[in-house]
Image (tube, rainbow, N blue to C red; front, side, top):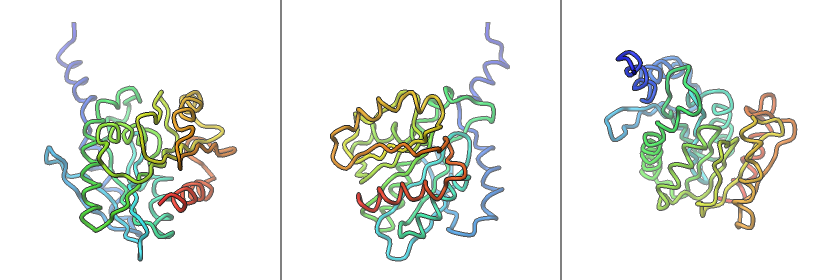
Length: 239
């Protein structure tokens, strides 16, 4: 039998942890040097943090989507959102739903519906700013969330998707847009095991490619410059 405490814990685990989100926001917003914090509102009325960095003469806008349990200025996400803005791309880094700190990857699909809602709101925000060309650059669990969004919103008019370190069996066979599947030679096991399946799903699709970054791990530790180079190179020829 499931006790009340166990049931309460299960329900808490399956729902996005807004308290944890607020803690992230309270920590990072005062430290933002590049870009401006913007709070957007999803369908249930919850306001979530984004970091908007407008590039002068922007050639396109990018949604930057982080992985499991972190925030929109975390590590390689912070690098991507600022460096790509320096390279002429407006960026909007989005706080995605997070669960409690000890949640496992297999718990996160419960948040994918809310993640899709946030992505739609973020796209609408960029459209309201006059951006006609929008791409998504996502990492890890953020790529799985993006996959959920794109498969359920085929009319989203996203120009390009840069998917970094996507595992857990997902591929791109349902996508029609150009995709860069980027992963590291020393990536996590789930990403490496699924690499051939992902490659097969974009083989022959115009504008799509898979890149394995030599010596890189799942987080591109000590290789952030290479990460930006791979992403920028693909965007420059695709947008």
